[in-house]
Length: 155
Image: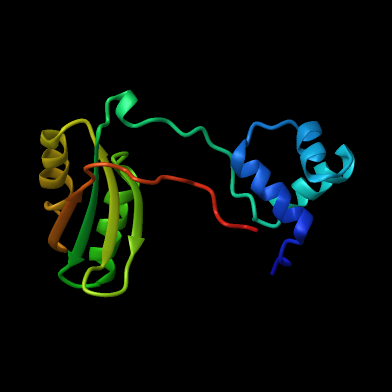
């Protein structure tokens, strides 16, 4: 198991969350290290799994995907075939941004994007509801996003 990050590691992680494209030189300056030790710490944080990757975040509405929905899915049963069929659909459909197995009344929470309400309905009826193991889907649509961040509180 990886050790917990120390104060300097946490500062590096905070700065990377602010700007993943920061140069090592600038990162070192911001956290109070020289470039070589900063680079070594960053490589260790990556190797130990604290940094899972780097990504470019796109604006879904700007690229034609203004509909954001959260769907609570309940399965009829948890037979391996039903779960495998659901998992396969989730992994293959680009509309599904996230899938979480949940405790409580529902089995899964999906975060889904779509170009229109019609596109969402088409996705739901042709991909989700066609699965024999799906009992129900309860969808809520985002009207306005009040906060969105990918930054974790590492401090």
